[in-house]
Image 1 (cartoon, rainbow, N blue to C red):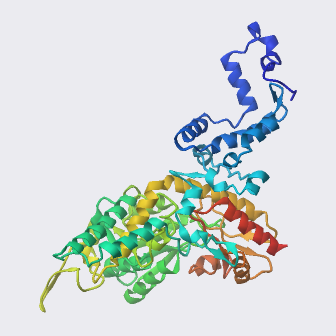
Image 2: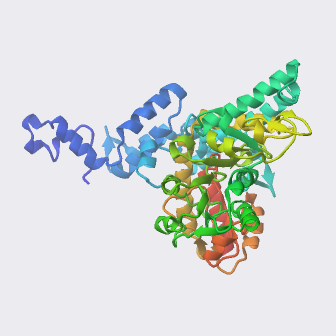
Image 3: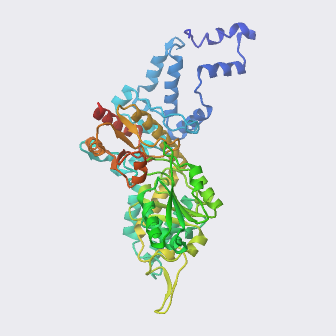
Amino acid sequence: MNTMTIDNIGKTEYQDSLPFGLPSAGEVEQWANAYFPEFDAQTCGEGVQSLVEDGNPSVFYTAADKAGNYLDQFTFGGQDYANILNEATKHEEKSFAPVVVSQNQAANNREIRVQQSNGARESGFSRNSGIIVGTKSLEDIRRDFPILSEKVNGHNLVWLDNGATTQKPRAVIDRLSYFYQHENSNVHRGAHELAARSTDAYEGARQIAADFIGAPDKDNIIFVRGTTEGINLTAQAYVKPTLRAGDEIIVTILEHHANIVPWQLIAQETGAVLKVAPVDESGQIILSAYEKLFTRRTKFVSATHVSNTLGTVTPVQELIAIAHRHGVRILIDGAQSVAHIPVNVSALDADFFVFSGHKIFAPTGIGVLYGKKELLEAARPYHGGGNMIADVTFERTIYNPAPNKFEAGTASIADAVGLGAALTYLDSIGMEAVNRHEHELLQYATKELSKIRGLHLVGTAANKASALSFVMDGIPDEKVGEYLNQYGIAVRTGHHCAQPVLRSFGLESVVRPTLALYNSPEDIDALAKALRSLAY
């Protein structure tokens, strides 16, 4: 490219072919597209809006960085481009900040591009301030989670064990504190003020959960202790009474033990059999093989939405449609999906859907079972006791309709309220934005980990979420975990309660980093750096 100035730019290659020496609008557009192929008018407009409304200049710094790739030989009014760029970015608040999230990037499945100038790093500037997730910067999101400021072995905590449990935002912590200070009481039937407050908070959380997953009514929502209890409830209360010897239950090889053992138990008790849908070499369910499992004896299907070990996002809409085509009801295990992927159970036409609160930034000991109204009505009670009854005599007991029918005993009231706060927090950011951020971060992490000698990723399905399971040549998985812990990096090692699928890959154990909305490119860089030092 010839060196040009802004003054002679219209007098070069186009002058001879244009009247009056001036390009037409169309030719200018063509020329601009040739020199600036990555120009995105929508992102530019959003950047202007963000600058005006929030004072966030990150889009412009990214644009300047891109412009450097094309304009490094241009001069502007005799000034060198590099000098202009240095002048524009010399102040700390205007240091380079990579933009990880953009609507067009996500839509086009483009890889994350993480760059960092030496000056920005030396000044202490956080790359996270330039990453926008929905309504917030990633830096602000990370500030919402107090534990992320913890030091472990002298290093900043890098929490990559989200598949086991997620950390809690201050909104949840504060909501629990407020409940115990101002609302604490048992729910329902109390004739005093605190009972009314706690009941409102508890039932309000039920409505929030219904809205979050697109349930038609809050009475479709059963509070349980977690996904495991929700699956067991469905197995014992709805499926078991329908089974006879020789009947069939279908699961997939991807399942967590919690979505295998409950079905084995009722199969053993009734004489039913378990049939298993296989996966291909990438870890994705083979739909044709799945459909071939259905017979006239098939009574129920239970399948994961996202594999807790491989991160595979299963084609749940197709799994549900195939089951219904054969007249069979289906449960979807959403424990590993609901914090990462927008879920609408009504749109999916799911019969049952379960998830755990602690995997979606809420307290432990609380979870949700969604069920269609007619199925909850058909199911028998799972536990007996207070709250689930309408009338009791020694001759006969009449139980309440759902959801109370399945919530015997004292509920985990505060934890349910905490779940409501967690879902409200996520709603304020936007699940579509969370999904885009995590998708791009997963792409970046996959690229970086793939560069490490002797490291082999396990599970390579095209559609994945969260999990980055791997093994390393000659290094036991537990040793990898111990080594990473020295640098404050938390991952999980072992079989992850998913032995059947790991054994289908010839493995007994993997190292499993898992992502969440607060994770950053810097977390990935720390992980990759530590693993490189271990490998070499």
